[in-house]
Length: 173
Image (cartoon, rainbow, N blue to C red; front, side, top):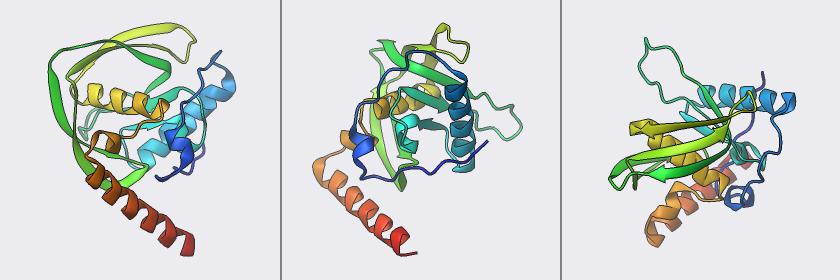
């Protein structure tokens, strides 16, 4: 497995809509494994393919945070929300492509999601709690939307400027 470089905002690929996956292949399964390793090493709970420069509708996530609990990695190709609760929750979100920046985002508390699994078959499940937040955040990535797009313009611009500065500092290093 390979750890992949994570794109940092602003990057035009993070604002582009990802293409659907026609078929789950061995190459895509390897990419999913690399993405899971990258996510765990970051560390994070979710990662979308565009964040590693792959413009396809693929996300990985694992929201198990308890130290003694077994990990529950999930790989979703072409995920889409097919139902959402009217109840909403606010959660402080962060993003591996926007390091060290956090903000409250309001989203549906529960969502029904349909996707292709590693087996190439269609799956459907209801997500709630942190899992619901994460899957919605990652699906947003596939649509070219970042969590900061939910913020007021001034806060969004401030975070973007911080990320531009971070990228300049990393380029010099």
